[in-house]
Amino acid sequence: MSLLTPLISQRADPCIYRHTDGYYYFTASVPAYDLIELRRATRIADLATAEPVAVWHKPDSGPCSELIWAPEIHFNQGAWYIYFAAAPSRDIKDNLFQHRMYVLRCQDENPLSGSWQFLGQLDSGMDSFCLDATTFTHQGTLYYVWAQKALDIPGNSNLYIARMDTPDKIASAPVLLSKPELEWETRGFSVNEGPAVIVRNGRVFLSYSASATNANYCMGLLWADEQADLLNTASWHKASEPVFSSCYEHGVYGPGHNSFTIAEDGSTDLLVYHARTYTEIVGDPLWDPNRHTYVKAIRWDSKGMPLFGKPSED
Image 1: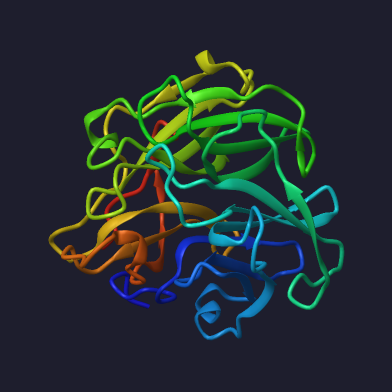
Image 2: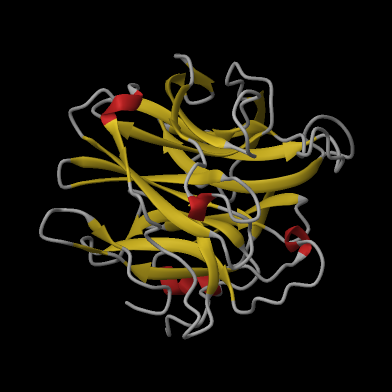
């Protein structure tokens, strides 16, 4: 598959999770923002033709009845969980949509054919616009990382981390990890969102996306020592430049909102992200459906830091 060819067309905010059963599980935002779908395959390339299964549809009214964004699937503490953002309407208040985070759970072996239970809102303790949650387990502790608006910080969203008690509840106060403060994080909109975690080479790496969702969209990187207190802001370092951004030479624009997975060989780390193939977006980028899912390998330098390269390079 060419790196310039999407794995899956019109699927933004992609998440690929490799489970112990040998399957890769895929979910993403669908263009209508009205449901959550899953597909699975034993090879990443086969996700492109795997039959999507809608496992949850938005209700007609209520707090999670509009704009279903960025679902992620995880297997935590013996069950499947999907974390997603949703709003009660399409209204914008205080210059933002009204999204909050919600959780689904499936206790069956196969999440495509199993029964999904709506567990409700995942309350961070901050009642404001939030989205793009992910989870990861490190040294026996389950963590929750997400993007949320703080009323006292300019911009759309910052990155926070908290310890989880159960996969649908946090057990510590939100800790601020990063806010949009650098020039490349504030193009069009001031944004830190779409966190994803990979632990390698003695460090916990947290990638995230920044700026408006057009060609300015790009990825930044935080990292902490794997033995550090991850709930201490001082444990984290922030790259001063983006680590992944638009490739004008080959026409891949606005790469971001990534997840990480591992190749079939069990050793090659893969970056899963979305991007567009043009810059001239008609109207609001939110309603442009052509953010496509791409997959590429990432490498590691002699100091153990990730090398993301360009969207058009392996």
